[in-house]
Image (cartoon, rainbow, N blue to C red; front, side):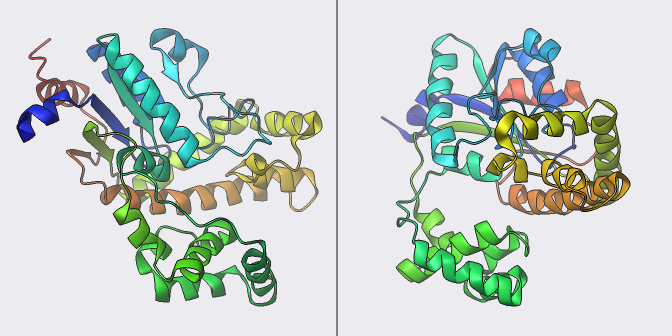
Length: 315
């Protein structure tokens, strides 16, 4: 079998990727409708039941237009990770393809997408001793001090992790300490769950425009009842769930605990979301995009270009 024939036998997948609030969901929905596709949500927070407003989860109306997959598959106190998502996503890709439809992956969780398309490495088991030491060091010197150490060892990994993200910083350092190999090198050696033929459409809006979109989105979430959603999850037994440490949920939880007034909590959500969006832009620029959108998308152009890639011809 030639390389071209092998490529044609791989499931064809369209991916709409990029930072939060950039417009991925609208474009992904439009493409799925035009192409006869189904959406696979690539979002590490939308997998949790009850986390709706704060994650920008597709509405019931959107889900009635096109089938959506990998939403609401775990409770907020469950440990859901990239490997579990990738394995389920691969099964769903095969199921959608077998029905003669097209999988459209939509989201901004780069690690999940990488786990599907590039694979996972056999990571060493977690070390409670190393993690406890890292936690003690962070309490003494601050998480950024650990992040600075990671930047010396693995600059690529450090660039994708917030200096205040102790969990991910500690994990990257843990892998280095256990194997002597940077986690970035492990990722580069990983094998995909299953080969895919993937067309990557990446949003890369300028930061000032993206910040404005984020501010409007957070305001809309607050108007839609985001605070009540957080309050309900906390009173429903999930106050200490890891999922409630996600963007927005953490800051509003702190407001409910009396850490700061609501106005300051909302400002903090906007600031932290913008910082996260910057890291997403950096990550997805490394995904070798086939089509980059730096402004409001031209739906007709993107659809025509995607149809050409799928060899569907004009609609």
